[in-house]
Each structure stands twice: as C-alpha cells, then as structure tokens.
Image (tube, one colour):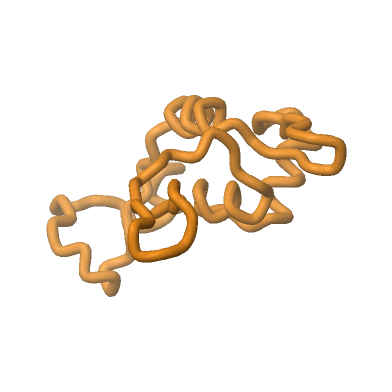
Length: 100
C-alpha cells in the first residue's frame, strides 16, 4: 500500500502498481537473485534499466511483465515435498527424464 495523502488520521491508503522497480525489487519480482538479473542484463537477455533521475535507475514494470510472459513454459514440476499435491501421474521430476 502506498500513502497518497501525508501523515495523520486522514491519510488514505491505496494499492498502486509501481511503474518502475529498483534492482533488488526486480530480483524479488522475477524470483531471481540480484546477480542473476545483472548477468542477464549484461548478456542482453533481460530488459535494461532506465534512467529515472540523475542518480537513479529503474526497470519498467511493463517491460519486466512482457519478459516474464515470454519465458518458455517449464516441463519441470515442483518436488513432491512442497505440498503441491496435484502432480500428474508419471510427471517428470528432473531434467534427466526430459532428455530421454
């Protein structure tokens, strides 16, 4: 929640979707480590940050969302001990089964 009106009893709270995220929050948003995001940016496999001000950069959320949607669907399923109980019968658990 982001506060729109200043402090005090009349401050309103509203849910705002951010337009840009810093590196740490981008890493959290895409479930990768900061170093992996940095590596992907260097390799050109991730959206580049934008200059927001003289000393601040941010990643545009719509570009991050587009990157996420473009990721291929994984054939790997969560391990059985994660509580994910609706695993299809015969589903693979590792990349070893995918190579066969």
